[in-house]
Length: 234
Image 1 (tube, rainbow, N blue to C red):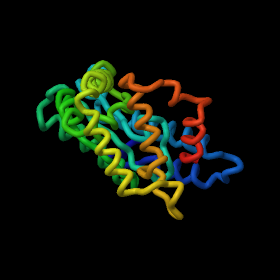
Image 2: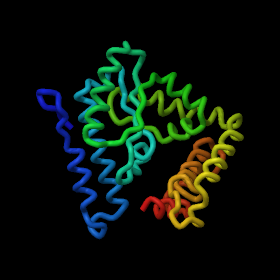
Image 3: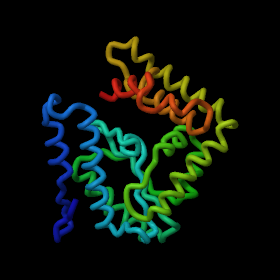
Image 4: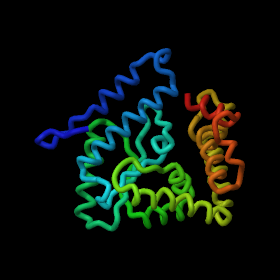
């Protein structure tokens, strides 16, 4: 992703996404489409981050969670991103954030975005179990890898340490989500993301495995859970 001399965004993101979605399913199956979309987004975000000055020793890291964090990007999905900084001046942070978000908005890309320090990321996870779950999927896309790793590794370590005290909160949040969305096997138009038996439940299994509360093999390829997961994604 590049910009013109006048600062107007010129991006291959919109065209690349449209080209991928136009490929017939018999030539590009669902799993291949997810992989291609993921690669497209990572390339564009890396280029955009470099242009914004987000480098290895910049004090900034671009971290993805959600579908891009899991490498499960679906067509028309929003990107879940956090710009992590190391207590930089507000003006610097604002300029870098604008250089990231505006070209993506101009390309028509939906965003769930935030700008936080490492401590703020971990505090948000400690205060909201849904944030804690989402950060378990986080990975560094660009910038200061060591800084980004403090969020990724810190969130997972915090999850393991706090799970005993937060188990009731997790159960309540899961029950509320399922009550709102229903059971996907019982719906004519199921909520494949939030419904019981859907993608959030697969992520829940992975989260329990990360906290060492269930067998991690239940969330890996070759199992019934993994097969059901692929079916819902497809």
